Image 1 (cartoon, rainbow, N blue to C red):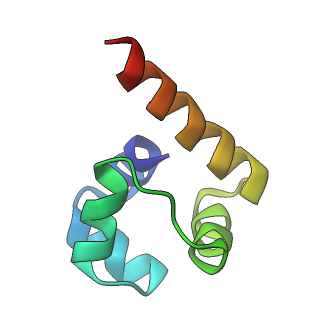
Image 2 (image 1 turned 60 degrees about the horizontal axis):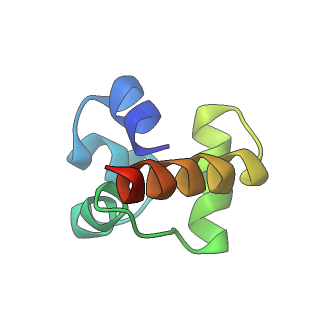
Length: 68
């Protein structure tokens, strides 16, 4: 999910502005934190996907990191 946001917006600051959160919040997502349901909804809107897809992608990222 974070990777898709970064591809679309190019920086944590731009992601934060698009979603309406702080850069620090975006940084926590880049480290594997789950967004709140409100922020997941905003992420889904800007990426053109569902909230479920946002959380599925986050789960895959966490699983991948655990396997490393």
